[in-house]
Length: 218
Ligand code: E4P
Image 1 (cartoon, protein in one colour):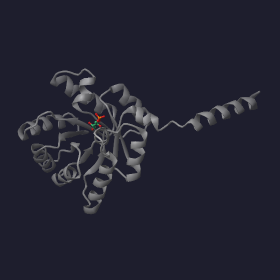
Image 2 (tube, rainbow, N blue to C red):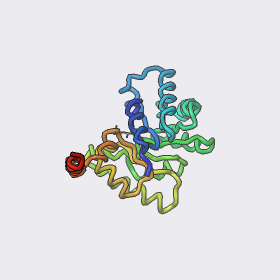
Image 3 (cartoon, protein in one colour):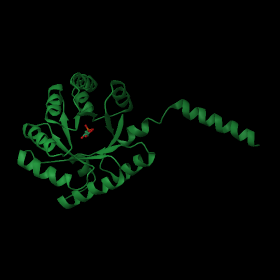
Image 4 (cartoon, rainbow, N blue to C red):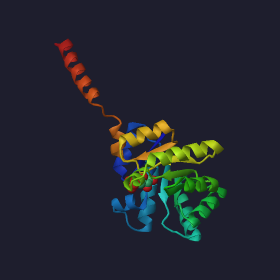
């Protein structure tokens, strides 16, 4: 299972990278805006700065919604660094563009996926990754993890190469259940990655071991 961090914050990316367990990064326009990045050149420079930190794939999202615009923007993003994966929304022209990128050797991440049908289309089009949004489905009363399970089953039935990238992960139980289901990748905020470290018995146990160790040194 690969771990991606879901942020455009360079410090958070460095922290996760320093743990030695980071396989890639996902960003989206909201995460870029949160960092206060403005203007095309600054956006491209920021993606390059992310690519310089990590070894794996870095998803950079297009904001065009027509085929020609998505292709032009995607080609520009892909030219920044070979680690870039072009993130394309699940819309009609997005599916066409994913197919175009597939035929031209450009990796894609099909984003804003909320149904098994959308995931099937993304795989048929040749997306490298499909990003179902767990938390946002839960937010509207659905069960995001049910969708993840459905997509993993469908992809396994046909041996699709598209990797299931569980997105919109809000807490540790989401991440653990994704691991149980067998997703290829989970992208989550730094807080969720660090949350995996925590267990009260680890803290209590360490305190006791350190106290006993002090006794052996008296
Ligand atoms: C990642 O690719 C998605 O853009 C992200 O996980 C969405 O998360 P959110 O629903 O917390 O904004």
